[in-house]
Image (tube, rainbow, N blue to C red):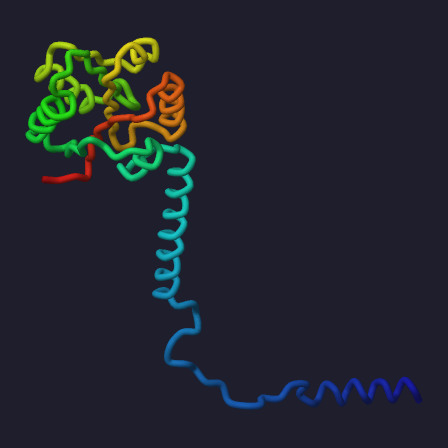
Length: 193
């Protein structure tokens, strides 16, 4: 009897549909897949943000100084003059202003101390023009034993050519030698006429 009951239940289960359609199927007008415009927008935004953060991290790690404001913060004084780096036509007037202004009536030599890269082409050109305009009593050096012998020092700073650590080391070395006030000029690539 139990076997018959089981076989009857199996037969009954085979005859009835185990599922039932609740509503009729509908097809939407637009696809349900992810929106490409939204993906592009968020991908572009995320890429820009990551690039910005990466650039800031790299800039902090290199420690290079790019603006005259950063130089002012580290040197604790304003530049004698900011000179447009990319306009060589202004260099001669600026150098003459320095020579005939700040270093007027000085019989003692002037020492030019280039900050940063020694093989910087524009820095070399600027120093050569300085030497051409004032060919006597000018020494170009960043060796501390020569620097300590001369009273008239002029630091030449250029954007992106020296790190904060290098500048602090130079500043400390000059202060140890007894020079509290640092005079400097800034060769600014962003300055225009």
